[in-house]
Length: 388
Image 1 (cartoon, rainbow, N blue to C red):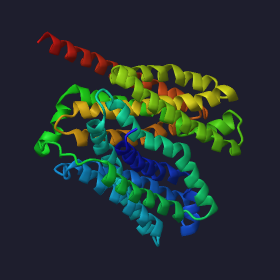
Image 2 (cartoon, rainbow, N blue to C red; image 1 turned 120 degrees about the horizontal axis):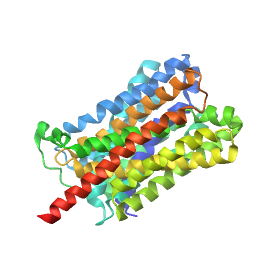
Image 3 (spheres, rainbow, N blue to C red; image 1 turned 90 degrees about the vertical axis):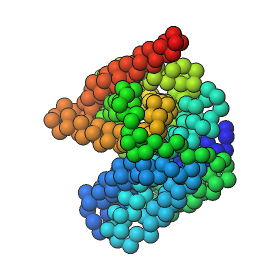
Image 4 (tube, one colour; image 1 turned 135 degrees about the vertical axis):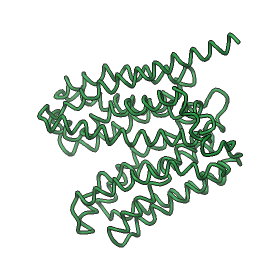
């Protein structure tokens, strides 16, 4: 594996830890700052707001050479998380969380372009899978380790360590990523021109609805596994490791398959599998062995969608590649929030803790339809080129 790709995966590893790790330590922060848990929850929202604001900022940075842009984003990862670790009060912490979220979408968006340029011929999807792989490894080992250190020592220490990872990412990119010319400047209007074609919208639909199909259920995995399947609270650490392992495998093999076959066909097939899987998750929610199996398979399918679609948007966003790639991360984050709200709504209406899995079925159906239409669109485009 190329060192240049690994340097980018270091950055997504850091981003994955600070995005998902906050969920497990809200009580620690609330107790330390003498605030309520609900108020501490705004720290998650502040990060998401940073993601939403930072991704479009690539428009202002589009003239930078790609290597310099990645160095800038790695520096913000380091500085933002150092600010979180050193924040003296809640207001400063809230601002620091916003700043630490700014490079998230931009790093993935620009990183996908860098991976595509550095990849060997025919290995573009696998190269982007390495980028996404940093986040899957974060979910597998980084987030549990982050949470453990927060509970054992201090919530500030792990953020300081993430800042160090950001600094290491900066040095690795500087040492291993070659100088890459900036993308051709198409102007502000030119950055949005790709949205006039159907393919990017189909990709965004696949991302949004494919992500939501699993996250409706995954957002409530702890109460489902403990109160429906009957696992103990202590078992959740093992279950979350199983979730992270599924993410790693799904991301890796989807990238490999997408290099061999059409990425749109691979992702459409994954979305079709989710249509079948979600009712099974609901029907067998009270059975321990199937439930454990699903906690591996479902996250694997979830991250099997992400890498190929991040790769595809670079292909279909000519003239606005960085904006297109960052848009994928915006779609992911908005989808997560909407999916959690949808899952919570059916639980509140008395349909049971396992019911969010059924909410995922229509989402998967829409995602599969969008990605299959994309696949047919690709085939038609290829046929037209061959006939010329």
